[in-house]
Amino acid sequence: MVFGHRNKCCMKKILVSGGAGFIGSHLCTRLIKDGHEVICLDNLFTGSEEDIVHLKGNPRFEFVLHDVELPYEAKVDEIYNLACPASPVHYQHDAIKTIKTSVLGAINMLGLAKKTGAKIMQASTSEIYGDPVIHPQVESYWGNVNPIGIRSDEGKRCAETLFMDYYRQNGIRIKIIRIFNTYGPRMLPDDGRVVSNFVVQALQDKDITIYGSGAQTRSFQYVDDLIEGMVRMMNTEEGFI
Image (cartoon, rainbow, N blue to C red; front, side, top):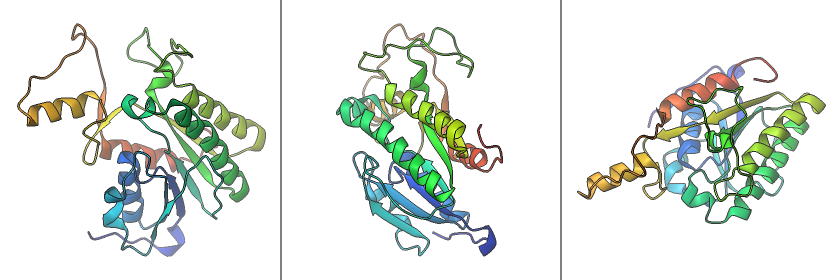
């Protein structure tokens, strides 16, 4: 793979937690292509070194096997906090670890941002709306949540709260995005989500499973479009957006 180059004065050192996951690996690739130095932090709970093998020969890329439940020290300019199992199959496999990853991971990454003066982005989720009663969801909608249900995402909601508190109390430059259904290369075939289910069933010449009445609605985005949005969001100048 040929990587782009930027003027050294524009180069940033960027930490991506969860960088060996589906979305994280695409983000690391984009940031390296843009000429930055990247630290990919991942405990490989759902991520895979195979997803970042194409980056390992690059001198501006570093992979660190680390769990964000524990503090991490590095001098960085930006932090993308993506570390957390994303699909129901994976975040319900060990629900306690999932919420610890969301909450302790947010605390540790925000602490690093506070110490280094880094700008930081939280990868939140559409799950924070719970089982919404309006479609499409707008940011002014607070959701219809069940905090004790198996699909509750209190960890992500708490992470958003922590980000806002660090912004209000400590002036940390934060960004929060809520990611909806994303598909593309390197997504896990067994993640239980609709696109991967459809593709796997089609490849196996099986009937396509439609759950419920079939009247459900979903929004889908290709992973490259998500990465473009994330980079543009991080590059905005506002302290909070």
